[in-house]
Amino acid sequence: MGIQIDRSQWCKRSQRTTGHYDEQAVEYEGIRYQCRKCTRSFVFTAEEQQAAYEIEKRFVQYLPKFCKDCSGPE
Image (tube, rainbow, N blue to C red; front, side):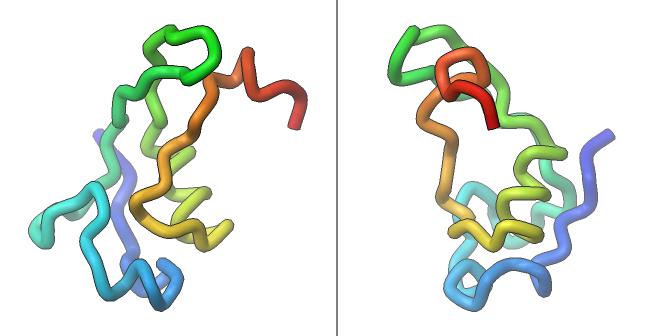
């Protein structure tokens, strides 16, 4: 089960596009991506997407460049 998308919490620029989500999408789902440093495959989780787009207000086409191991301490 994913986490419900609240587009009203996206930044204004994101609200004018769909990013990774079609207009019918109602939940965040994991997005598999590849780390640019170690090249391992990882998942950008629904929780991480909600935090990035609704709390941090990142543009909805944002994907992490590095896995957690390669991005260092937060």
